[in-house]
Image (cartoon, rainbow, N blue to C red; front, side):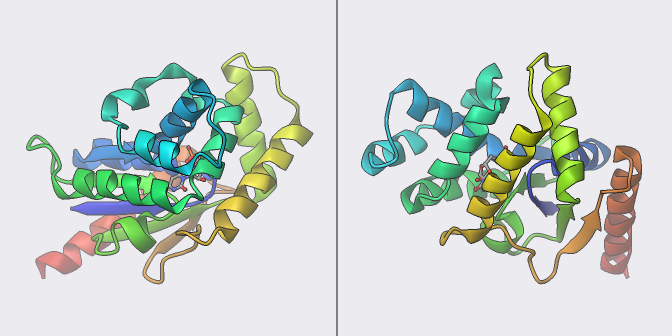
Length: 215
Ligand code: C5P
């Protein structure tokens, strides 16, 4: 079973993906971390966005181990990630990584679940089930603010919401694999849902899908 989950930052797709992965024993890849890991390397190597060949070369070196880096979840790295994510060479290099993950899940798992921005539309268009997880901007910004504060990072709401709007705009308007709802995706708006209720909704959809497969 391959499940694709897309949506903007702070919508709750990561939490839902983790819950589904646990419930169905699926290998989970949070694809945003690939772009974040690359952004971290770009920053470390003091490259700028015009160094496209060097950035593309770095993209092809990203491994699962790079995703364990504790510094990847900062706002700065998230911003830089959305900038490197607009480079076509980068998307091509990371596409192979993601498809390989989806096509060859480790034998202990029943399949794979990938979450990101273009999973249902481009990375795994043949996914068995696709979700698009969304929530109102203000709700997403509040969640992100809380997450940052919980990690001891001082932040202010107006900066967080502005950052989110910039990133949404960049992700939705880029030429390469923009964030959009796949035609066959189930949309879940988590604005008024608890994480548990959002997960339950997603599992109900999967169960219905599995029933139709058995018939
Ligand atoms: O999901 P997360 O916020 O960690 O992603 C960081 C950035 O990586 C996003 O803003 C987006 O620009 C990029 N990204 C992408 N395609 C994906 C996953 C993330 O372009 N599949």
